Each structure stands twice: as structure tokens, then as C-alpha cells.
Image (cartoon, rainbow, N blue to C red):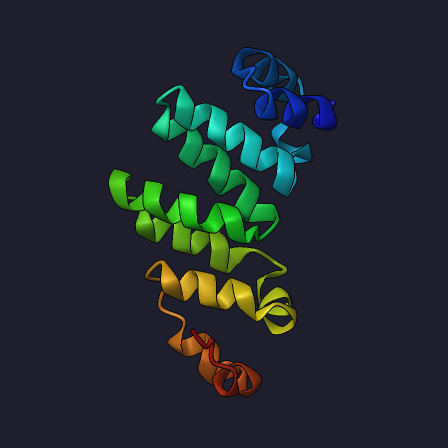
Amino acid sequence: MGIAARTAMKLGKSEEAAMLVAAIPVSRLRSGLANVALQLKLEADDKDGAFELAREVLSRDLVPGIIGTAAELARELGRQRELEEVILMNPEFEARIQHNPEILWELEKHGFDVGDLRERHPEMRRTRRRG
């Protein structure tokens, strides 16, 4: 069903994609389908629903592409602290940032205070994004 939803989005068939994604429990949405579901909510001008969806996904899985959209929505809705708590409370958060520094850079780019994380993880202090 996930492939069908992504294909429907690519073909510009938002209504069909929405029906397919709606049939999938939020707990089963991973990065690709979560992005499709998030895009559908935004196209329907449902910012609160999009934020809630992003928050739910990020509480389970740190998806760099969703972090940016969620951060933007959180700023617009005045819910930045809530989003930060959800991300930092993710049980896999610290392990993921050690293996994927892109997540840390993504958070920093969107205004998250990552100073404490850099102090706790010396290997993260040495790596700086270039460009």
C-alpha cells in the first residue's frame, strides 16, 4: 500500500494517495510514507494535523526530512518546546546522533540547542559540517 501511495503522489493524484495513506496506522508510517502523509496534511492546510503527525513520527523515528518541516510548523504554531521534548525523549536519540551526525546538524540548523549534546559526545564536537 505504501508504494501505491507514493506513486499516486508522484502522479499528482493526491486524493487517491490520501485514501491509501489514511488506511495505514500512524504507528506504521516510516520516513517515505510519513513524508507523503505530512505533505497531504499540508496540502489540505491542516497545520495542526501535520504537526501532530510529525510529532508522532519523530517520537519513534528521527527522520531528518521531517525534522525540518516539524520545526517550521512548531514555530508557526508556537509549539517549539513541545517538539524539542518529543525529539530529545526519543529512546534512540542519543544512539542515532552518534551514528548519524546529519541529525544533529539538522536539529542545529532549525534552532535546537545542541550544545549539551556536543559536550556529552566529544566525537560530535570534532565533526563540523562544511559548506
